[in-house]
View 1: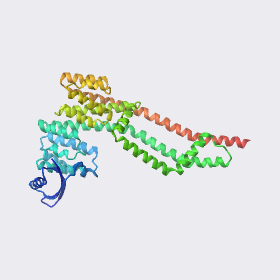
View 2: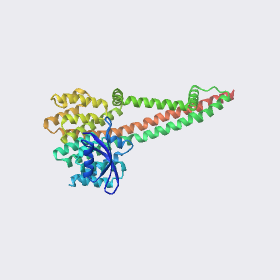
View 3: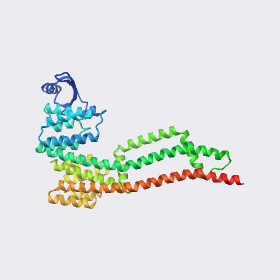
View 4: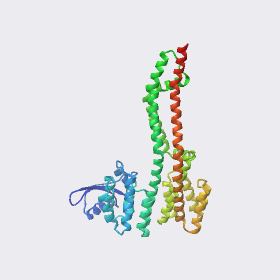
Length: 404
Protein backbone atom coordinates (compact mmCIF):
# COMPACT_ATOMS: atom_id res chain seq x y z
CA UNK A 1 0.00 0.00 0.00
CA UNK A 2 1.52 3.39 -1.00
CA UNK A 3 2.35 6.09 1.52
CA UNK A 4 1.10 9.64 0.94
CA UNK A 5 2.53 12.87 2.32
CA UNK A 6 -0.21 15.31 3.22
CA UNK A 7 -0.84 18.81 4.51
CA UNK A 8 -4.21 19.72 5.97
CA UNK A 9 -6.08 22.08 8.30
CA UNK A 10 -8.33 21.21 11.22
CA UNK A 11 -11.63 22.84 12.17
CA UNK A 12 -9.84 25.75 13.85
CA UNK A 13 -7.64 26.38 10.81
CA UNK A 14 -4.48 24.99 12.42
CA UNK A 15 -2.07 23.47 9.89
CA UNK A 16 -1.13 19.80 10.29
CA UNK A 17 1.08 17.54 8.19
CA UNK A 18 2.19 13.94 8.14
CA UNK A 19 2.33 10.68 6.22
CA UNK A 20 -0.32 7.96 5.93
CA UNK A 21 -0.90 4.74 4.03
CA UNK A 22 -3.86 4.61 1.63
CA UNK A 23 -4.86 2.69 -1.49
CA UNK A 24 -5.35 5.90 -3.47
CA UNK A 25 -5.15 9.67 -3.10
CA UNK A 26 -8.92 9.99 -2.88
CA UNK A 27 -9.05 7.42 -0.07
CA UNK A 28 -6.56 9.45 1.95
CA UNK A 29 -8.60 12.62 1.43
CA UNK A 30 -11.74 10.78 2.59
CA UNK A 31 -9.85 9.54 5.68
CA UNK A 32 -8.73 13.08 6.51
CA UNK A 33 -12.29 14.39 6.00
CA UNK A 34 -13.71 11.74 8.34
CA UNK A 35 -11.15 12.81 10.94
CA UNK A 36 -12.22 16.46 10.65
CA UNK A 37 -9.29 17.66 8.52
CA UNK A 38 -9.44 19.43 5.17
CA UNK A 39 -6.62 18.30 2.88
CA UNK A 40 -4.66 21.12 1.21
CA UNK A 41 -1.88 19.06 -0.37
CA UNK A 42 -1.45 15.32 -0.96
CA UNK A 43 1.59 13.78 -2.65
CA UNK A 44 2.63 10.15 -3.01
CA UNK A 45 6.05 9.35 -1.56
CA UNK A 46 8.58 8.65 -4.30
CA UNK A 47 9.68 5.02 -4.73
CA UNK A 48 12.90 4.15 -2.91
CA UNK A 49 12.48 6.90 -0.36
CA UNK A 50 11.00 6.13 3.01
CA UNK A 51 8.24 8.58 3.84
CA UNK A 52 9.29 8.82 7.44
CA UNK A 53 12.77 9.99 6.47
CA UNK A 54 11.34 13.06 4.74
CA UNK A 55 10.12 14.35 8.07
CA UNK A 56 12.95 13.08 10.24
CA UNK A 57 15.79 14.20 7.99
CA UNK A 58 16.34 17.41 9.95
CA UNK A 59 14.76 16.24 13.20
CA UNK A 60 16.70 15.03 16.19
CA UNK A 61 15.11 12.78 18.80
CA UNK A 62 17.39 11.81 21.67
CA UNK A 63 17.44 8.31 23.08
CA UNK A 64 16.42 9.79 26.46
CA UNK A 65 13.23 11.15 24.88
CA UNK A 66 12.47 7.77 23.31
CA UNK A 67 13.08 5.97 26.62
CA UNK A 68 10.61 8.24 28.43
CA UNK A 69 8.06 7.71 25.65
CA UNK A 70 8.35 3.91 25.79
CA UNK A 71 8.05 3.86 29.60
CA UNK A 72 5.13 6.30 29.75
CA UNK A 73 3.27 4.69 26.84
CA UNK A 74 3.65 1.16 28.26
CA UNK A 75 2.55 2.31 31.74
CA UNK A 76 -0.54 4.05 30.37
CA UNK A 77 -1.56 1.03 28.27
CA UNK A 78 -0.98 -1.29 31.24
CA UNK A 79 -3.18 1.01 33.32
CA UNK A 80 -6.04 0.37 30.90
CA UNK A 81 -6.00 3.73 29.09
CA UNK A 82 -6.99 3.37 25.39
CA UNK A 83 -4.28 3.75 22.75
CA UNK A 84 -5.65 6.98 21.25
CA UNK A 85 -6.08 8.59 24.66
CA UNK A 86 -2.57 7.54 25.67
CA UNK A 87 -0.96 8.90 22.51
CA UNK A 88 -2.95 12.15 22.70
CA UNK A 89 -1.87 12.68 26.30
CA UNK A 90 1.76 11.98 25.47
CA UNK A 91 1.65 14.26 22.42
CA UNK A 92 0.54 17.11 24.68
CA UNK A 93 3.21 16.64 27.34
CA UNK A 94 6.29 15.54 25.34
CA UNK A 95 8.87 18.36 25.37
CA UNK A 96 10.74 17.36 22.20
CA UNK A 97 8.86 19.08 19.36
CA UNK A 98 9.98 16.60 16.70
CA UNK A 99 8.77 13.60 18.68
CA UNK A 100 5.59 15.44 19.65
CA UNK A 101 4.75 16.09 15.98
CA UNK A 102 5.42 12.45 15.08
CA UNK A 103 3.22 11.13 17.92
CA UNK A 104 0.45 13.52 16.83
CA UNK A 105 0.67 12.19 13.29
CA UNK A 106 0.64 8.57 14.52
CA UNK A 107 -2.52 9.44 16.47
CA UNK A 108 -4.17 10.87 13.34
CA UNK A 109 -3.30 7.75 11.36
CA UNK A 110 -4.92 5.52 13.99
CA UNK A 111 -7.98 7.77 13.95
CA UNK A 112 -8.06 7.22 10.19
CA UNK A 113 -8.27 3.44 10.63
CA UNK A 114 -4.58 2.38 10.63
CA UNK A 115 -3.28 -0.13 13.15
CA UNK A 116 -0.72 1.10 15.68
CA UNK A 117 2.05 -0.98 14.09
CA UNK A 118 1.24 0.43 10.62
CA UNK A 119 1.31 4.00 11.90
CA UNK A 120 4.62 3.46 13.69
CA UNK A 121 6.19 1.75 10.63
CA UNK A 122 5.87 4.98 8.61
CA UNK A 123 8.45 6.59 10.95
CA UNK A 124 11.10 3.92 10.59
CA UNK A 125 13.91 6.35 11.53
CA UNK A 126 12.32 6.90 14.91
CA UNK A 127 10.69 3.57 15.71
CA UNK A 128 12.99 0.60 14.92
CA UNK A 129 11.78 -2.50 13.16
CA UNK A 130 12.20 -4.43 16.40
CA UNK A 131 9.62 -2.25 18.17
CA UNK A 132 7.21 -2.22 15.22
CA UNK A 133 7.24 -6.01 14.89
CA UNK A 134 6.75 -6.46 18.62
CA UNK A 135 3.75 -4.13 18.52
CA UNK A 136 2.38 -6.05 15.54
CA UNK A 137 2.74 -9.34 17.45
CA UNK A 138 1.12 -7.76 20.51
CA UNK A 139 -1.84 -6.59 18.43
CA UNK A 140 -2.29 -10.07 16.94
CA UNK A 141 -2.05 -11.84 20.32
CA UNK A 142 -4.04 -9.29 22.31
CA UNK A 143 -1.10 -8.79 24.68
CA UNK A 144 -0.05 -5.31 23.59
CA UNK A 145 0.29 -4.07 27.19
CA UNK A 146 2.81 -6.80 28.07
CA UNK A 147 4.72 -6.34 24.81
CA UNK A 148 5.10 -2.59 25.34
CA UNK A 149 6.32 -3.10 28.90
CA UNK A 150 8.78 -5.74 27.70
CA UNK A 151 10.22 -3.40 25.07
CA UNK A 152 10.45 -0.51 27.55
CA UNK A 153 12.55 -2.72 29.87
CA UNK A 154 14.65 -3.90 26.91
CA UNK A 155 15.33 -0.36 25.70
CA UNK A 156 16.14 0.85 29.22
CA UNK A 157 18.71 -1.90 29.75
CA UNK A 158 20.21 -1.30 26.32
CA UNK A 159 20.62 2.42 27.05
CA UNK A 160 22.07 1.66 30.48
CA UNK A 161 24.82 -0.50 29.00
CA UNK A 162 25.56 2.08 26.31
CA UNK A 163 25.74 4.88 28.88
CA UNK A 164 28.14 2.92 31.09
CA UNK A 165 30.43 2.31 28.12
CA UNK A 166 30.43 6.04 27.32
CA UNK A 167 31.18 6.96 30.92
CA UNK A 168 34.10 4.52 31.00
CA UNK A 169 35.70 6.16 27.96
CA UNK A 170 34.86 9.77 28.84
CA UNK A 171 37.74 10.52 31.20
CA UNK A 172 40.48 8.79 29.16
CA UNK A 173 39.34 10.54 25.95
CA UNK A 174 39.29 13.96 27.66
CA UNK A 175 42.72 13.28 29.17
CA UNK A 176 44.20 12.21 25.83
CA UNK A 177 42.62 15.11 23.89
CA UNK A 178 43.83 17.71 26.37
CA UNK A 179 47.27 16.13 26.50
CA UNK A 180 47.62 16.12 22.72
CA UNK A 181 46.53 19.78 22.54
CA UNK A 182 49.15 20.79 25.12
CA UNK A 183 51.86 18.74 23.38
CA UNK A 184 51.08 20.33 20.02
CA UNK A 185 51.33 23.79 21.57
CA UNK A 186 54.70 22.99 23.14
CA UNK A 187 56.08 21.34 20.00
CA UNK A 188 54.94 24.05 17.59
CA UNK A 189 55.59 27.19 19.66
CA UNK A 190 57.84 26.50 22.66
CA UNK A 191 60.41 24.03 21.31
CA UNK A 192 61.24 26.12 18.17
CA UNK A 193 62.04 29.12 20.40
CA UNK A 194 64.47 27.10 22.49
CA UNK A 195 65.94 25.47 19.36
CA UNK A 196 66.71 28.88 17.82
CA UNK A 197 68.61 29.88 20.96
CA UNK A 198 70.69 26.70 20.81
CA UNK A 199 71.38 27.12 17.08
CA UNK A 200 72.50 30.74 17.53
CA UNK A 201 74.77 29.63 20.38
CA UNK A 202 76.42 27.15 18.00
CA UNK A 203 75.16 24.10 19.87
CA UNK A 204 74.48 21.07 17.71
CA UNK A 205 70.97 19.80 18.31
CA UNK A 206 70.80 16.26 19.71
CA UNK A 207 68.76 13.73 17.75
CA UNK A 208 65.61 13.93 19.97
CA UNK A 209 65.65 17.73 19.86
CA UNK A 210 66.27 17.73 16.09
CA UNK A 211 63.31 15.39 15.49
CA UNK A 212 60.90 17.29 17.79
CA UNK A 213 62.02 20.66 16.38
CA UNK A 214 61.50 19.66 12.75
CA UNK A 215 58.20 17.97 13.57
CA UNK A 216 57.00 21.19 15.20
CA UNK A 217 58.12 23.30 12.21
CA UNK A 218 56.36 20.92 9.83
CA UNK A 219 53.11 21.07 11.82
CA UNK A 220 53.32 24.86 12.04
CA UNK A 221 54.01 25.39 8.32
CA UNK A 222 51.81 22.66 6.85
CA UNK A 223 48.97 22.41 9.39
CA UNK A 224 46.34 23.15 6.70
CA UNK A 225 47.59 20.26 4.52
CA UNK A 226 47.69 17.97 7.55
CA UNK A 227 44.12 19.00 8.36
CA UNK A 228 42.96 18.35 4.78
CA UNK A 229 44.72 14.96 4.74
CA UNK A 230 43.19 14.01 8.10
CA UNK A 231 39.68 14.96 6.93
CA UNK A 232 40.14 13.08 3.65
CA UNK A 233 41.45 10.03 5.51
CA UNK A 234 38.50 10.18 7.93
CA UNK A 235 36.01 10.40 5.05
CA UNK A 236 37.66 7.46 3.26
CA UNK A 237 37.58 5.32 6.39
CA UNK A 238 33.97 6.37 7.06
CA UNK A 239 32.95 5.50 3.50
CA UNK A 240 34.79 2.17 3.62
CA UNK A 241 33.28 1.32 7.00
CA UNK A 242 29.79 1.62 5.46
CA UNK A 243 30.50 -1.04 2.83
CA UNK A 244 29.78 -4.69 3.76
CA UNK A 245 33.46 -5.64 3.49
CA UNK A 246 34.56 -2.62 5.49
CA UNK A 247 32.03 -3.20 8.26
CA UNK A 248 33.04 -6.84 8.51
CA UNK A 249 36.77 -6.00 8.65
CA UNK A 250 36.39 -3.23 11.24
CA UNK A 251 34.03 -5.30 13.41
CA UNK A 252 36.45 -8.23 13.21
CA UNK A 253 39.28 -5.96 14.38
CA UNK A 254 37.10 -4.68 17.24
CA UNK A 255 36.59 -8.23 18.48
CA UNK A 256 40.34 -8.92 18.31
CA UNK A 257 41.47 -5.88 20.34
CA UNK A 258 43.02 -7.00 23.64
CA UNK A 259 40.69 -6.46 26.63
CA UNK A 260 38.37 -4.09 24.71
CA UNK A 261 37.56 -6.88 22.23
CA UNK A 262 36.14 -8.94 25.08
CA UNK A 263 33.85 -6.04 25.97
CA UNK A 264 32.65 -5.67 22.35
CA UNK A 265 31.87 -9.39 22.23
CA UNK A 266 29.94 -9.37 25.51
CA UNK A 267 27.91 -6.32 24.44
CA UNK A 268 27.03 -7.98 21.11
CA UNK A 269 26.03 -11.26 22.79
CA UNK A 270 23.92 -9.44 25.38
CA UNK A 271 22.14 -7.41 22.67
CA UNK A 272 21.48 -10.49 20.52
CA UNK A 273 20.16 -12.59 23.40
CA UNK A 274 18.02 -9.76 24.79
CA UNK A 275 16.57 -8.94 21.37
CA UNK A 276 15.80 -12.56 20.54
CA UNK A 277 14.27 -13.14 23.98
CA UNK A 278 12.11 -10.02 23.70
CA UNK A 279 10.85 -10.97 20.23
CA UNK A 280 10.14 -14.61 21.04
CA UNK A 281 8.45 -13.67 24.31
CA UNK A 282 6.25 -11.22 22.40
CA UNK A 283 5.02 -13.91 20.01
CA UNK A 284 7.13 -13.07 16.95
CA UNK A 285 7.98 -16.25 14.92
CA UNK A 286 11.56 -17.45 15.36
CA UNK A 287 12.61 -16.98 11.72
CA UNK A 288 11.33 -13.40 11.69
CA UNK A 289 12.94 -12.85 15.10
CA UNK A 290 16.30 -14.00 13.72
CA UNK A 291 15.91 -11.64 10.74
CA UNK A 292 15.34 -8.68 13.06
CA UNK A 293 18.11 -9.78 15.43
CA UNK A 294 20.53 -9.89 12.49
CA UNK A 295 19.72 -6.23 11.75
CA UNK A 296 20.17 -4.99 15.31
CA UNK A 297 23.19 -7.15 16.24
CA UNK A 298 25.40 -4.06 16.05
CA UNK A 299 28.32 -6.09 14.71
CA UNK A 300 28.69 -7.40 11.16
CA UNK A 301 30.50 -10.57 12.33
CA UNK A 302 27.63 -11.53 14.62
CA UNK A 303 25.10 -10.34 12.04
CA UNK A 304 26.47 -12.81 9.50
CA UNK A 305 26.57 -15.50 12.17
CA UNK A 306 22.88 -14.97 12.94
CA UNK A 307 22.11 -15.13 9.20
CA UNK A 308 23.85 -18.53 9.04
CA UNK A 309 22.00 -19.68 12.16
CA UNK A 310 18.70 -18.76 10.51
CA UNK A 311 19.49 -21.08 7.58
CA UNK A 312 20.00 -23.99 9.97
CA UNK A 313 16.78 -23.21 11.87
CA UNK A 314 14.88 -22.88 8.60
CA UNK A 315 15.90 -26.47 7.82
CA UNK A 316 14.36 -27.60 11.10
CA UNK A 317 17.48 -27.77 13.27
CA UNK A 318 17.70 -26.43 16.80
CA UNK A 319 19.26 -23.08 17.66
CA UNK A 320 22.10 -24.30 19.89
CA UNK A 321 23.92 -26.40 17.29
CA UNK A 322 24.60 -23.63 14.70
CA UNK A 323 25.59 -21.27 17.52
CA UNK A 324 28.22 -23.81 18.57
CA UNK A 325 29.44 -24.34 14.98
CA UNK A 326 29.91 -20.59 14.45
CA UNK A 327 32.60 -20.40 17.15
CA UNK A 328 31.56 -16.83 18.02
CA UNK A 329 29.48 -17.74 21.07
CA UNK A 330 31.08 -19.05 24.29
CA UNK A 331 30.26 -22.61 25.43
CA UNK A 332 28.17 -21.36 28.38
CA UNK A 333 25.84 -19.49 25.99
CA UNK A 334 25.46 -22.54 23.75
CA UNK A 335 24.77 -24.79 26.74
CA UNK A 336 22.14 -22.47 28.22
CA UNK A 337 20.40 -22.08 24.84
CA UNK A 338 20.33 -25.86 24.52
CA UNK A 339 18.76 -26.20 27.98
CA UNK A 340 16.20 -23.52 27.10
CA UNK A 341 15.20 -25.38 23.95
CA UNK A 342 14.91 -28.70 25.77
CA UNK A 343 12.83 -27.20 28.59
CA UNK A 344 10.56 -25.19 26.28
CA UNK A 345 11.56 -21.91 27.95
CA UNK A 346 13.90 -20.52 25.31
CA UNK A 347 12.90 -16.85 25.69
CA UNK A 348 13.33 -17.03 29.47
CA UNK A 349 16.76 -18.67 29.14
CA UNK A 350 17.88 -16.10 26.56
CA UNK A 351 16.83 -13.37 28.95
CA UNK A 352 18.92 -14.96 31.73
CA UNK A 353 21.94 -15.07 29.40
CA UNK A 354 21.47 -11.38 28.63
CA UNK A 355 21.20 -10.55 32.36
CA UNK A 356 24.38 -12.50 33.08
CA UNK A 357 26.32 -10.79 30.30
CA UNK A 358 25.05 -7.36 31.36
CA UNK A 359 26.52 -8.09 34.79
CA UNK A 360 29.85 -9.20 33.31
CA UNK A 361 29.86 -6.10 31.08
CA UNK A 362 29.77 -3.92 34.21
CA UNK A 363 32.79 -5.75 35.63
CA UNK A 364 34.63 -5.58 32.30
CA UNK A 365 33.99 -1.83 32.03
CA UNK A 366 35.38 -1.29 35.54
CA UNK A 367 38.40 -3.41 34.69
CA UNK A 368 38.92 -1.61 31.40
CA UNK A 369 38.68 1.78 33.10
CA UNK A 370 41.20 0.69 35.72
CA UNK A 371 43.65 -0.42 33.03
CA UNK A 372 43.12 2.41 30.52
CA UNK A 373 43.79 5.27 32.93
CA UNK A 374 47.33 4.19 33.92
CA UNK A 375 48.11 3.27 30.31
CA UNK A 376 47.12 6.76 29.19
CA UNK A 377 49.14 8.29 32.03
CA UNK A 378 52.20 6.26 30.99
CA UNK A 379 51.75 7.39 27.36
CA UNK A 380 51.41 11.03 28.43
CA UNK A 381 54.42 10.62 30.73
CA UNK A 382 56.54 9.27 27.86
CA UNK A 383 55.49 12.16 25.63
CA UNK A 384 56.35 14.68 28.34
CA UNK A 385 59.65 12.90 28.97
CA UNK A 386 60.65 13.07 25.29
CA UNK A 387 59.79 16.76 25.10
CA UNK A 388 61.65 17.57 28.32
CA UNK A 389 64.67 15.59 27.10
CA UNK A 390 64.63 17.47 23.79
CA UNK A 391 64.67 20.75 25.73
CA UNK A 392 67.27 19.86 28.39
CA UNK A 393 69.84 17.85 26.38
CA UNK A 394 71.03 20.91 24.38
CA UNK A 395 71.44 22.82 27.66
CA UNK A 396 73.93 20.23 28.87
CA UNK A 397 75.81 20.49 25.54
CA UNK A 398 75.77 24.29 25.84
CA UNK A 399 77.25 24.12 29.34
CA UNK A 400 80.02 21.85 28.06
CA UNK A 401 80.75 24.29 25.22
CA UNK A 402 80.95 27.27 27.60
CA UNK A 403 83.36 25.35 29.89
CA UNK A 404 85.73 24.75 27.00
